[in-house]
Length: 569
Image 1 (cartoon, helix red, strand yellow):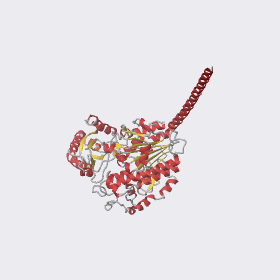
Image 2 (cartoon, helix red, strand yellow; image 1 turned 120 degrees about the horizontal axis):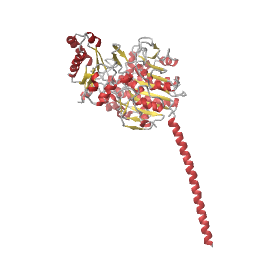
Image 3 (cartoon, helix red, strand yellow; image 1 turned 30 degrees about the horizontal axis):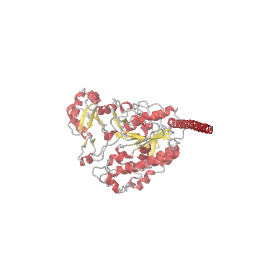
Image 4 (cartoon, helix red, strand yellow; image 1 turned 120 degrees about the vertical axis):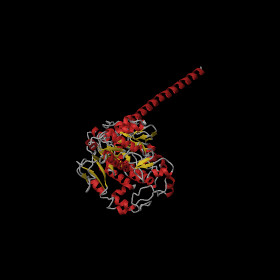
């Protein structure tokens, strides 16, 4: 009896114990599920929320490999490592057209389109309908705002035939979103900002002040006048430019400080660091500041002033600030990718980008803005540097060759200046003269092609109207086709061999299909951006398409890009 009672009590207690445990487990599971659902809801809200501000950053002339090559020199709190470590890096981003030059690149990034569609076929082109050379952003129907002399302000995006992501953002919010473009180069500010932007500001190199045009506004805001009155360029001229790292580091990463194939950006006697003679340019030549890293400092300060005074990111809708850093292009052209000057430029730019992000963090808040960083094009090594190391490279004096061809063509066909333009690795024929003399244009074209092909630097030459039939690598053909616009492109295309550049004995340039010109960085950072990296091939045209997806707005009117799904949360 006693044992039966004891057994009953034991069984009862065990059942009670397990029932209690089971009840606790059910409650705990329910609470965990609710917590998880709440967390998911919070995450969903965060992912679905739009950024308060988009900060687009284009570095004029940046090779993708700079991110890897100079990475040990970038600071933990600098811009590049911050974006690479905490954002998403597209390591195989390519330009999908030629020519790989500034105006085309800036337009492509913000339109998701190619020259064949958006119409910006170069920095300059020869318009066959107008029978004259055209600059990408020239506009004689507008006036400069803030400039006192010259035509520096007679600029607008009217030659761009499509909308930008900024235009679409403005449309989506009934023009409540603010869009502002800032760069030292006019085309670096105007083309990204787009047609309906609130403003675009660029540097008037004759005065050292930021200006705009009546396309955007009738007078400069007070904050821009106040910024210009600071005379920052004069202050930087007085500082001069010296190396910012120990000499041993430059010797580790670069060639010698002085090389005969580098250009003399600051005068024939300014051969090496330190460049301490910049004070001579105060009130005389403000263009020299662009060939120093201080051009980046000025751009950052102008961007910060715009963000603060225009209250960007404080709107009820998303705003967009488009920033382009022009100085790397000037420094790269003059000194090349393996120079002390180029290395110093990027180390300093990394620091400036870090300070810019710190400022935006303080003003807008971390996680409340979205930023991307890319380049409008990359660049070739200086041919003499390549030859010094037994690598294939060389130069081609295109202007000299055209001059000689025109001389011989006059003797053969009796035309003055048969070739009227040499731009974007294309030749444009004098159609009015050829037509008036009733000459055989095909015969003239074939003579020119045969003449070009005799040069060792020329890989190929052909009539652009025969592009589809011309046998060549499909990647090259597609890039040429994407860059062709019937009224703004030339008649005859010539392609240089890899490593060759056009017409420069010192310094270097860009513009061709090759990876050293077309492989660009693409970093994403901030609101709704995954952390990671990928070597999947993406294109410059995909940037605007991805932004449209992240902002939940329509793609620009000429966009041919695809959404980069890896980037989006």
